[in-house]
Image (cartoon, rainbow, N blue to C red; front, top):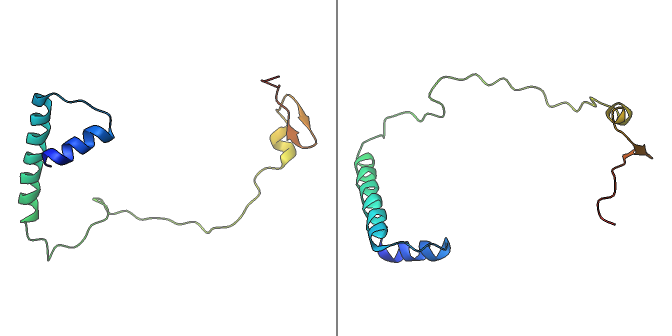
Length: 93
C-alpha cells in the first residue's frame, strides 16, 4: 500500500488518521507484503489442491419438494386471522 491508496481509503471510509497512524498502517502493510512474498516464493506446483483440511464426506439429499405444513396448521396459534392471512394490529393511523 502506498500513500495515495491510503488517502483514498481515508476519504472512502471517512477517516482522519494522524501522521503517526498513517505510518503505522503503511508499516503494517509493508510487513504483510514481505510475508506474502515469502509465501509466493514457495514452490507449490506438485502440491495437490485442498478444499478442506479434514476429509469430509458430503451427504447430499435428493431435492424433493415437500409440503411440511398447511396454512391452517401454521395459523392455529395466531391470535387473529382473516381470509387465510395473519391479522396484526395497525401501528400507524
